Image (tube, rainbow, N blue to C red; front, top):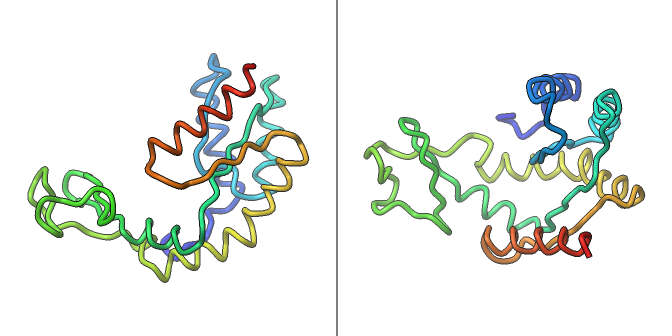
Length: 165
């Protein structure tokens, strides 16, 4: 992960299956950032089928490559209390210092610009094919990443409200 590469499919599928086993009486859930490959999607279908469940929807949030690099490389966190900051949208009161505990902020290795660009090349190779995969199944809902998190969330809710009508 520190190099921007994906965790192997089998490990991820085992983790997802373990989570679903812990929540065996719950048939509603949201996954963020999963699946990331066609084999993960196919494995997930098997896991769901074994539980008499099926995937209802997949949300794709569209964003420009430069914006991804900008947003992720702006993320900083506190190693002491795990508070998260962003030099674009949530700056600490004192640059580089945690507002909560006063510790010096760090940037995760996988949020450094060069690693983000590598993550993007992995995305284009391994994850982007899922867009057509889910579009062909009629499950894909695409929304724009424009604006802040609240705007994106409202657009996602809007997509689902269309389905209720």
